Image (tube, rainbow, N blue to C red; front, side):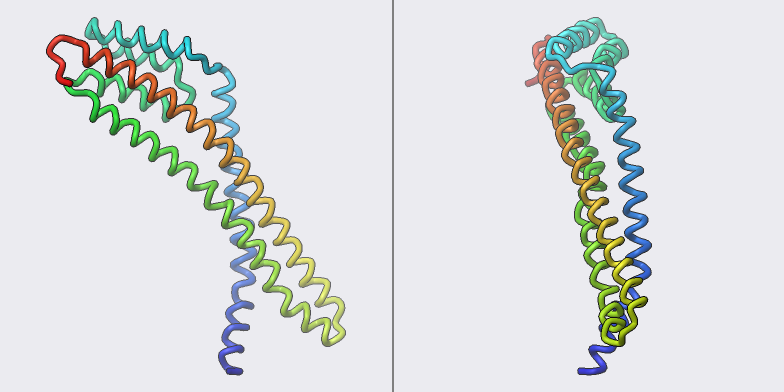
Length: 216
């Protein structure tokens, strides 16, 4: 058993450096995500979400499609988009709604948008779990040499290891808290975007289905 314990102790000691590096990288990652979110939010702040605007954009897009001008329809919908992904999906909805049987194509575009949102959310959701886990590991690993220093009367070793342990704890909790806040706000914004796109898609497909020669 002593050999097994020695292997466990050696493995834990070897993890201290990687854990510290990963905690720093996690902090950098959450700061980058916060910067990306700031750009997203600044774009959204320039336009307010109003149902009347969605109705007007859908009506303009329907009129353009009836005239055989999908480019104008895409421009009409672009006015109510609040992100690059939403803009691209709105353009895809125009293309899909001009097909003979638009429902399946529109559903696929909406599913792709939802998948893309989930992919972006996965980054911060991972950091919500990853940050505190690294903080806990960074706390526990230095406790072993700290206790050895305490037992041997080496106060300096005790202080140094406790300082590392508490610093990594704070770092991990900070990463988790920031990532959690970003995830909450992004979930609300992306859910709102998806709701708007579903509404636009319903209006466009209803119009497409009512055209002569369309198949329901």
